[in-house]
Length: 256
Image (cartoon, rainbow, N blue to C red):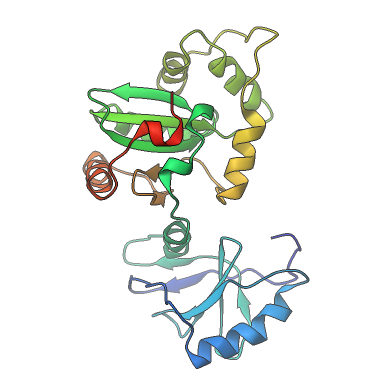
């Protein structure tokens, strides 16, 4: 958010995991809350929508890719995440991912590292930082996934040397192999030639546009995304379902 909110953060715990459907139109109560909460959010902050949640009598407030919560009088704003105490799933993150669905073909795949396994028919795009420990865990899972094309966007947000490592990997003779050697086996790529540039700024701008705030963030062929860890079975299911709903055509997005 462009302007800091002078509010205390709160962690809200929910005992159930109900699904949140995005309403096509606000109810009168939601519209009233929308009108009340928007001027209280800060200068130049636009509320995109308000909808009632199934937990705690809270109302979801959506603004610029972020999700907050308020009460029916719009007096209190809850800044934090709703967690299901039975599964420990971050429901706020899941909801933000649901709202962040994109058209996969719009991704600038020429700024990503392309890795093909097997027939490559299924597809995923992953925003990763070379210093991300959770990305390493994801790649341990990916070792057991076949018939997939992976587009890796190197989003350098975690450490000062992330951009240096990304540039070295991008400028390697075989960047896919250099990335795999680093993320799976911690084998650093050689220093990049002086004249080689990496799409660092383009990927940072893309991440900002898509409200990617952590790594790894995964997009599937149907445009859905997740930032949650996967086991092999869950990832296989998402890849196959996405390919069925929205078959990937690399040429549609100008992929190499």
